[in-house]
Image (cartoon, rainbow, N blue to C red; front, side, top):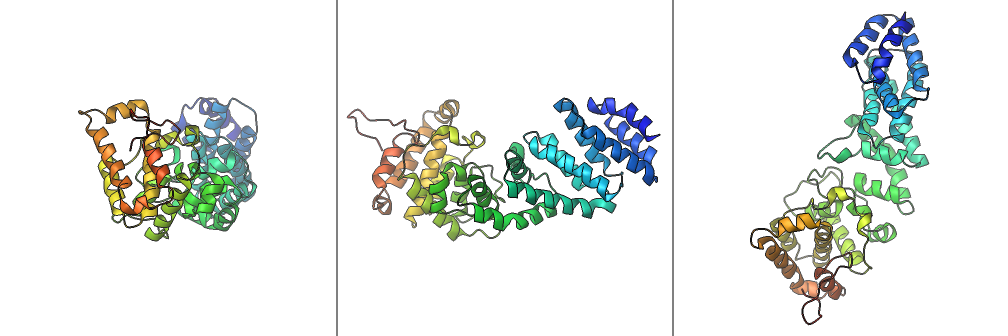
Length: 371
């Protein structure tokens, strides 16, 4: 009986034991028997609906999702199981393993794959439409690059399903960006939507904390903009150098005309993870013909430097102060550009370059701000 197999293997599944043996046992027992496959699926659904410790529930969710590779149950049963797995995954999405259960659903048997992926698409759109936290944010992370701290493409959904979902969500997200900070984050990361109006409404951290899809350099969103505004870097499809230049100009106008920032608002994942100083020097030099964009890039540079921890800063100053001297050289390069000096917020640039964007300014012996 199917129940006998499940009674034997489930205690081990809950303890994350016997994974291969458990799947093989259930697959052999239900092979070529639609009745037994339906029984097994019903039993798994019933088990998933029970209350148990979260670690055990996660193990069961992963097992149930993987079982769809060989359990070709009815569409109604598959739907019920996938909906439970999806709900638990998005609710507990800070745990990558929970989200992988959703990935396993998308990799189900060929007989049900089209049905399941259509169902997942519907569930994704429904989740974004409700914008319920943390489910929508967890789902956004699972569908994005840099998921769970890894660099490079790391979506937990098949690429074709992710692309279809992002396309289906575009209008909703972009239309909602002006009034919803979460949608503003998604609109920037997935579709490159950014403007001075959006920055002023949602704050600069919104555009620092996530990078643009297709940028695999492991840097924050503002540094990504600086790279995109320069030649020699591959750009995501549909995002041009002109867009990056205009966005940097908006960043500069906002950054140098507003008050101090709060360090707690900025994603620690990107703190100190920036381009080396010689690269910054080259990037800023290349932008000198577009002074407002250069100012925006300089703001991004100052922000990254302000976020570097004391330990990282001490490391930078090793080697007889070479790094510190280069840092001063980069600041001097920008602040002595003639076109930069003509910007109305130039005095503020000088002030912030002397200290930190978080209000920690240094003064020279005469009490004046140092450049």
